[in-house]
Length: 113
Image (cartoon, rainbow, N blue to C red; front, side, top):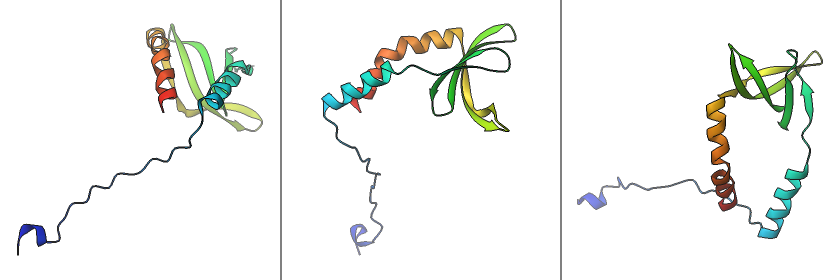
């Protein structure tokens, strides 16, 4: 019996990503309408302004241990109050500047997908 008849064939199966095809006109209209939408602003318990960026997701600029941070976090409602969740990230001033510098490349990647 040869090695090809052994039944130990390796099959390379990769998950297939499904894409919904959109024509470019629809993409441009959708992205421009998102830019026109004004973000909701709230104030947290510490007096920091919170900018809503999505479904229960907020961006806050705050100070922690003497350092300015850009905090992006999910929130949840508890007893009628908005409370910060565990999921989130705090960026230092330098990290935020690096992110701003990458925005153009990130936007192009989103268009390419």
